[in-house]
Amino acid sequence: MADARGMSRRQVGLGALALGGGLAFASLPADPAAAAAPSLGGGRPALRHGSAREAGLLPGPLKQLVTDAEAFLQPSPEHPWYAGAVLLAGRGRTVALHRPIGMAVRYQAYDEETDTGVEFPPDQQIPMAEDTVFDLASVSKLFTSILAVQQIERGRIELEAPVASYLPDFGRAGKQDVTIRQLLTHTSGFRAWIPLYEAPTYEEKVRRVYDEELASPPGTAYLYSDLNLISLQLVLEHVTGRRLDVLLREEITEPLGMRRTRYNPPASWKPKIAATEDARKPWSGLDRGLVWGEVHDENAYSLGGVAGHAGVFSDAWDLAVLARTLLDGGVCGRRRILRPESVELMFTDFNTAFPGDEHGLGFELYQHWYMGAMATPRTAGHTGFTGTALVLDPTTDSFLVVLGNSVHPVRGWRSGSAPRVAAANQLARAVPVRPARGRTAWFSGMASAATATLALPALDTSSGAARLSCALWWDTEPKADVLVLESSADGGTTWQPVPFTTRRRGGSAEPHPTGTATGWSGRVWHDLTAGLPAAPGLVVRWRYTTDRLYVGRGAYVDGLRVESGHRRLFDESRPADATRLRAEGWSREDD
Image 1: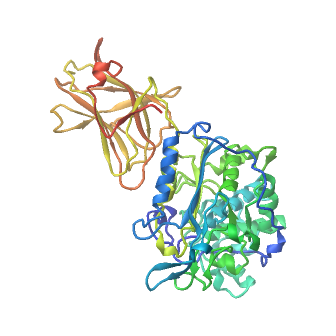
Image 2: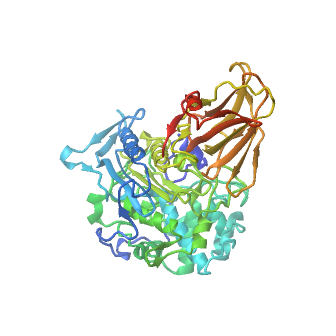
């Protein structure tokens, strides 16, 4: 569901509440019988449950992930963020965490006069289970995108072709130059959404899409819009002659054995589905009462539940299978749904002209606002308005599924994306960083709105030839969180930055003339050298400062040493020197 005011996805993540009424569209009236309902049972290809150690993860952060998630079942700060959730985290082919918390069905209505939820009697409430099925909302866009990339592989669609070359009427109202790539990367110029559910007929809904004027010229701005994936659905159905729900079943879910993933779940699934909203005007576009077992999005509901941008239902395990398939280059067991080079395109940023809105084909990239410390330039994922999220990190071969019913009983109870960020931070922390040279290394921590310092003792560098060397590892929220090397010659009253140079193994030297490191460094160790100012009592320190919003994986320092000519002024490997380091916020870690 796109935000009606045209906000970017990052702005929505900062706490803006999405307005009522997303978009959905089906090329034919959706018929639940059109796709045979698969069984909820079945095998689990390519994945297995296992321990944190078997997954190459640290158990402590995974335990904290659950604790953090449970905190959002309570007022946070005024209302619970969700009634319940299913959490899944893994690395490689091992799912190390698969935990339901809270309730799948708790409220039968929302009382707007008192701003409270009217609960079902206790015997009618349903707790979350590992296999609870959720309305994925905009996570559905990933499935549509995969289907589009499949057709690009097969030559039925060209990435840079105008949409109007497949749908001539789409070219009306100045849209003749919009390309397939621009639909997939939200750079077409479409506004966020229009209330198609108000159109009385299918033909009128089609006409409104074709007659829609652009908010900006194609390719000149990033604007997240449901209309992009609705249009892509029309292209897919035209070039294949199959409806989107049939494409989903035949091209993705059946090959991958995803038996709990489909549009329009049958009535027999309802006891296993998480309820969503007491949908009534003015906060909803339609008066429907409690939405449970049917798609939450207003237009998708009015058109039968099948849409390019919303309408897919799934559970955590099925999404983990999809994640593993993509991390493995498009293959699951003996079944391939995409070529490796196609998956690479989905994880490659096409929006370099719009920093902060990185986007592959269908997948969002490098978005700290919900990926938290898992975010890297290649971390891919998506969120859904109902409280869902999928995050894949090829760098660490890890994946995260957070499925929450955060619009239950009403959408206004939640804002921002704090539970997603908290879960992603803990999974990122669970991936160990091995010390560069010894058994332990200094770690800055991952606290937000904090400053951590690691200071060497005062050293006599008056000879003018002193040099600092160490191993450095950093990954921070770009520009917002900064690691600084600085020195003081007056006992800490004033501090000056110390320029330094880093070099990763097999790479070239990278200068840091301002004495700072921020953003992405590859999550590998770098060798660092720095010339130090001449002073009889010079104090050198690392200072790591974070803002209040998001954090990266933090910073590590190992093997600190200061030499002046052939004299060693400080060596962390010597026990006496190591005890002279002063750490505030930094800790020794033996990941």
